[in-house]
Amino acid sequence: MALYGGRPARDLTLTDAIMTGFRMAIQPNFVIPILVIGAVVNVIVYAAFVPLLVGLVIDTDSSTDVIGGAMVTGIVGALVAGLIGGVLLNLYGQVWAAMASVGTAPTIQEAFARVAQRWVAILGAGIIVAAVGLGFFIVGGVLVAALGGVGFILFLVAIVASIYVGARLSLSGWLAVDGAAAMDAVRASWEITASKVLMIIGWGIAAGIVFGIVGAVIGAILGIIPVIGTALATAIGSAFGYGSGVTIYRKVTADPAPAAAPAAAPVA
Image (tube, rainbow, N blue to C red; front, top):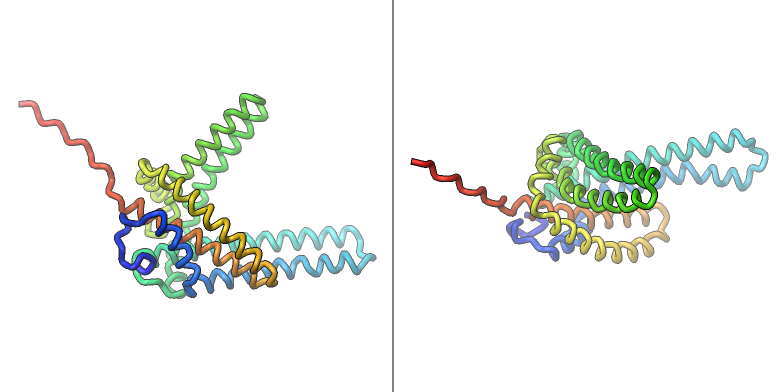
């Protein structure tokens, strides 16, 4: 395996999850497409908002309707670009990491070829998981509005439940990358994570703390570089996230399932 040097997935540790993130950050075939996607999105956002801001400062004769229309157009354009860029980033990041974790590191062309094959299932699984998570917060918000203090307690319960369910469904996208249909990926994630919730949450928190500190420093340094700096920080942050995520996925799916209870001997 390119990311683990041939080590069996069941032997992977939290240290491997963290180090894999750093290892992916120096992989050109991973970083370059993410960098390009981020740079293109940033250029579109700049193109949408900079002329508008200049017009607001310099052109004092513009009517309110013209300014309002330009602002709405700029916001919509930026949102659409960000959405498309985010989807492409997620698809490429998951696919590249999944392929590199079981074989040689794929080329950019090979990764995009897999994206073209699996994007419907990956997006479908992501939408299902997002809808489930959003449902918890909607229900919690309704309870707070309807029941006041008691509702707030129930809202906290809903948050804890959403974390638990999120951990149980966290492998859905990775399973979709590896060939499962959207609903099958969600069901499989729920089944194989039954005894791994604490590990998934614990590894996720630990890696998040490490990458959060490192990412904040990198972001502060690269943020002063227009367009490219922010895109490069995004690419490095994506490497951290997908590297640790795919390590958790391979670890969980490699661990043998609990043995079934032996069947009772037939009565003579």
